[in-house]
Length: 241
Image 1 (cartoon, helix red, strand yellow):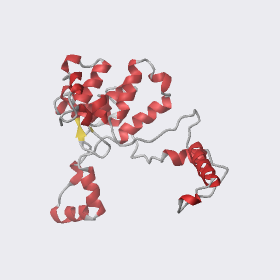
Image 2 (cartoon, rainbow, N blue to C red; image 1 turned 90 degrees about the vertical axis):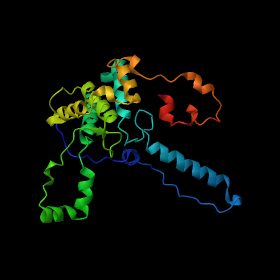
Image 3 (spheres, rainbow, N blue to C red; image 1 turned 90 degrees about the horizontal axis):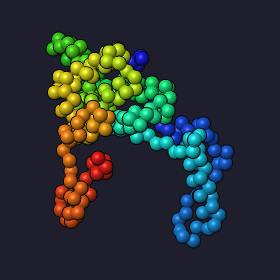
Image 4 (cartoon, rainbow, N blue to C red; image 1 turned 60 degrees about the horizontal axis):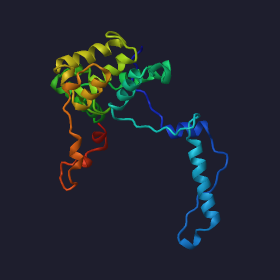
């Protein structure tokens, strides 16, 4: 599998709108007062809404949405499909290949964002010229972050590495992507140093003992909401986990 550069993602609504063009072009209606809200105005507005959503609907009937950014969502999908034996049923070879490409493209680069800023402001050449500094050592560190713009973390790296293995990538290959990812994990304490969310997914996969997870007693939900430690105040992802 080829490791290509950063790919350009299209907005899903725009992509489907081009495939499902709307025939009727109804005018946009703006009202300034409740007296202007007539049956015709309401009907036209509803038809505009229906036309809009019909253009961004996928062929199988659902409305897809792009949730790009977090690196911990795709692994959960792949792990779930793998343990249920539905990986190759739900995901075609082309889908699996593009998932691998997505992970390849977002493997973290050490100081890449600092370099980008330096290049943008023209400071990189200035530093090289006056300080005779060699920036060639700022290479990929081999890990993955919590999100596509974050530094490498054990959480993002282990889950992304496991996802690639489940999608068919071997221990070696992919132009060194797998070796670099594995080296990052080992150099930072190993996969057991992953956070609780990661331990949960590894346990679901069968690669980590459930006894290694820190349980959260469900009885805490019985506590009054006046307590700041009530789980209802947590992020929705935390509540689900």
